[in-house]
Image (spheres, rainbow, N blue to C red):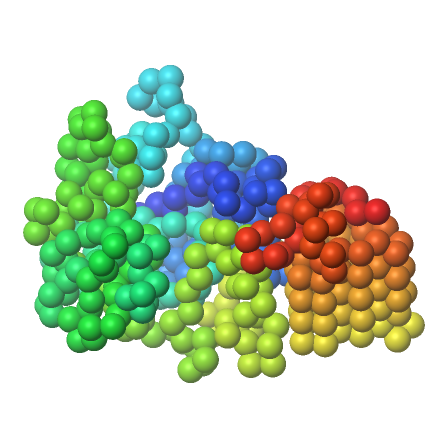
Length: 405
């Protein structure tokens, strides 16, 4: 639309996601299913598209086939209006090497920037669960004239050691950017709270290009956006913080306003699912004023037969709960839970089959897992450790296509 800033969006989706193994044994982290209907990448793409940002490049690398296919088949915008969302695999444009870091991924893909010629570049991660209007962050960035604006979320100082932390003045100017510091800085208006980086950035194009070129020429750099590029721009005095608390998303409730989760571990992934299933969910998937968009499979509605029931749960299309009890669980599409089975506090991804009389508790079952009749998962943790992956928090995880006897 005339008068709007020319913005290119770059989504960093090349993460290997080792801490989510075995869910990432056969797919990139942003392609991991979430919430019954979605993939993790659907959250960032929904936020960008809902905000009217419609020129988006998704940089992929690790086991990217299912991610590329999902983007290509699901995220189709109007080419007539110049809109696009395109997956961009590692192309080795600068020689026979893969990406060595998130900054190197963008540096090796600068042809995208040169082709589009944007005034501003939004660089967002692809594997967080949240709602945000990035347009408000872009507006603040333009108003301040900063080289980069970093989205910061307020976290208790005691928990901030696990994050990249932002030290800023009352005017929003970032004075230090610290990676997992022993003594996190506090926000100007609260000594008990720290700004943690959300991994979301808005750059003025020239500032980003200058920083990427300088970083590429540094043989000692890790070529990482948070570890190298942001500190470089902070040192030059051109970095500001965007307070996530200031972001107003249409339809947000007081309970889920400001929700953001890094689902980088099995336990975090599990807990984020449990946030969905309460009567008043901590994260509300049902906000139609700011929808999380995806493509739903051509399946019939869920069916409950022979006294089958689900309580405090999400049940996806095509699933059949037959004479079974499901509680506090997320059941994705095309799942069958048979007579006498009990599923409690679990996450079942598409195509799972739970046999007659089986018990599944505090578990994550990846796509097409088969739980045999009478099998027991999540009751005897020692026995589970001998056969399956068990997270630090005691969640039992079965990889794609596994069979539990």
